[in-house]
Image (cartoon, rainbow, N blue to C red; front, side):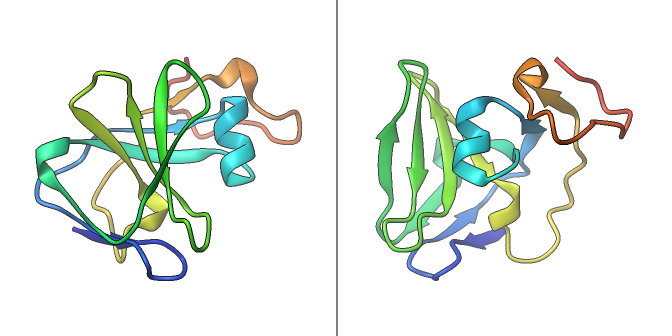
Length: 121
């Protein structure tokens, strides 16, 4: 599986099947993405990143990897975790992944409803 940012400066390859596909509705993900952020996890060892990624820390909980050129929000990694969440929207081509849950739904925007029947936390 291959992916990239909008401007092409950052490209990445995933050598394992991503798991735990979710949509995050927290305030930070909404601000970073403009709506909600969909991702799935892979082991850090299964992710190869080519190009400059700027890692930012917006909370004590995690670091977020963005492209310094176009600002695309590509990666999320919990502090001390081996897994990295990759933006499903950054995958070039079909993902083969099925959404498993919506998270931080109590923080979702008031301008949309979640009606797809996928579990919500």
